[in-house]
Image (tube, rainbow, N blue to C red; front, side, top):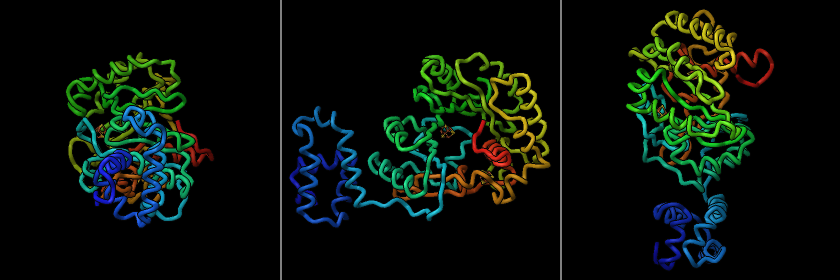
Length: 367
Ligand code: SF4
Ligand code: SF4
């Protein structure tokens, strides 16, 4: 295959497509004529000065757009039907530097192998196509850790009317004025670090204090409450209440089917007392806590199934398109945002109930 191109041309194609394997694959399966290949190659390589690596690097953005256009003739994203999805989330990488104990991304049964990657040009192209096909207005960027692909995320954000990022905060807090950055912490330091890793609390705190709080980014700290860290709720609020952020949010653990470990409540009635404590905290810290009391009341055991269903049949978040990285480096849709093997009857995702609350009220905004 390489013999069809001179070696420097092949190197540049490799650069444009992200890897030699990808370049070879695109050439092999493109179905375009040799003449077209030569034309496209020349068009890509002669853009700008085309002579010096430094100049090429400066033009990298434009070249990637060209590469993406070329991909347009070659790659189609996975077919998720014709349904409209106004909101979606995308797992931009399967890689993460942490190994949190309650992580749903790396659960067995979810498409989460680190080998399944997609280069920047392909991902931008596929997100654009999915946006146009499904009418996606709002995109949540997650991972793995999305800031491992910061450049890609910033570029992809331009494709959508509304974007937000969920990050573990260890790569710094991205500055994205007028957009939401959710930073995960799971309790006071003594409880967070056994869950998220030694030294993580301190690192995230330093990152939050290092950011410019006037840069216009909306920064929320989010704690996922489990049966294990629930005792630390009030202590957590005391620890973070004076941090330079826009608020603190809570969500509850979403167990997988048959999960009976230390994190999940077997019986939702046991969770009710914790929800009551969150409501009390909200009443005490009405501005700091981004929780809605009516939504929290809907999460209580006697009402929760009305908004989830045993198998997600009532779940408002099923209208969100979850894009995970699947086999062969293409997008794959999971059962819901939390993956495939979820126990809807014990779902603790605050967003499920808050979306239902706003639907009942007739609007689509969320706290
Ligand atoms: S930071 Fe997020 S993606 Fe990474 S292990 Fe923790 S929960 Fe999972
Ligand atoms: S587990 Fe998933 S589908 Fe089921 S209720 Fe929760 S968010 Fe919805």
